[in-house]
Image 1 (spheres, one colour):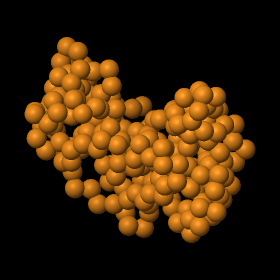
Image 2 (cartoon, rainbow, N blue to C red; image 1 turned 180 degrees about the horizontal axis):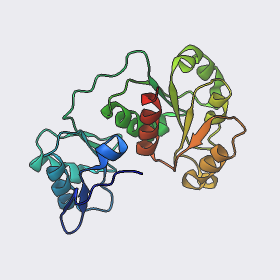
Image 3 (spheres, rainbow, N blue to C red; image 1 turned 180 degrees about the vertical axis):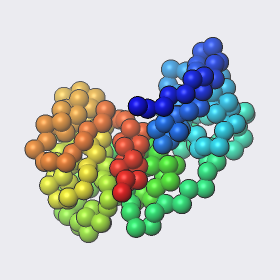
Image 4 (cartoon, rainbow, N blue to C red; image 1 turned 90 degrees about the horizontal axis):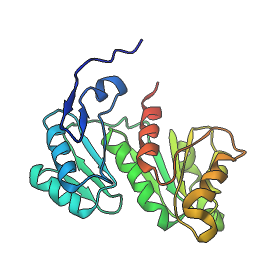
Length: 227
């Protein structure tokens, strides 16, 4: 039975910080910033910064980062991925294994970068290949060597989400499909890609939620850590 220790969270009134998450789950709690005020996010990250683990804040805007930076000067921000990062651990990636993050189009890069940076902050080697969607499949086929060398693959795609199925048919490695909200009206803000990926006939594909780069990166890191 899992060992859930009592009272290993810190009460802030508006939030309860889970300081035991890293021991239980292998990585510390991440802060979902969207919906929180900049002040709330800043206080949470300031409290977490007293620990020894890397800190990740997802879906963070520039105003939120400015508030965090006042309390945690070493905090970094990636505007494209909307991520706040505080690097506290010196994690050495396994040079023999890497996670490949791919996108169908350039517009899918924000979600893909969220996945890539999440995995890197967890101590993994990540390589990126962008804009190789099925509308120009020769671009994908030109990357076959790198695709087959990867240990885990994250595929970010909007529109109809077809790239995940094509990649799943080329490799014997786990493929994590990341649907994005990119597309015209009938894409329904990523729902079409999500359903397409869930209905893929290619085996070995797992699907995360629309634009959930953090979830894709976290899962890829967990798989890449397994022996």
